[in-house]
Length: 359
Image (cartoon, rainbow, N blue to C red; front, side, top):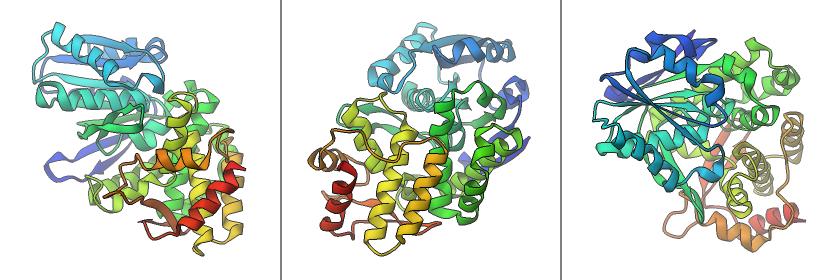
């Protein structure tokens, strides 16, 4: 087992990474203060792991909250189901919520924990690659609104993250690829050596070789932990973690949440961000093409869905948390391994990028 730390002073917490950690009672009990526990999961993950986690927590008063699966259910109405169960069971401020599942479960459980009786503890047990390398770390919780993704939420850090690599064995191929989009993102924004390594090893990663899966989770978590420790509330450097997300969120909102996986939309967004970066003279065209090849080798899309117009893209991109005082800001690449958030790009270049991909 590898243990990393998200350094946030008195709110610091560990990330445990290894195989078969989901069965280790000590990893949970160390971070549970009271007698009440609520395991929140979804209909897909519950048959696989709920009984195992419940057995590990058998010394506690455990309730189960099984939610429908899918990004389309990431709403205030669904979070209210969690509150219904907590209140019906008379859970108090000493309760601990356990988020067992992917990013949607983790985001909603964390948001419920942030709100219930003005804040209770929660533990992240991510079971998808995307949630292990990204969404379970950093305390960003929330739900979607029809006009914008993750626009309603709170910063609420978990008590710990238990990333069991073995759970990736039950992950569908498309979900593994979606997680790889976020892995590739770390190479692009802050780790060029990792990016080069991914180019060489992508085929073996897709074969799910345990040592490679462990490496990409550990390396990604290290980068995420460093950035979060430096900028918890996304007021500065942390914004670079959103590379490709402004374009990607527009795709998700336009299609309707759940039509594309988040990582698939982010993959397209990263290509569009790289294209715009090249138009600004920061990347060369060969680097953009290499990114396309890498994403395609990870079995990810590299162009948006047919039917989106430039006006629709721009309208949805402006409903974004990076917009300040009406000014659109984007995360772009100065070079591979060096990202920046900026509003200093010409509208003409952005229009050219949109026109290229809409065509």
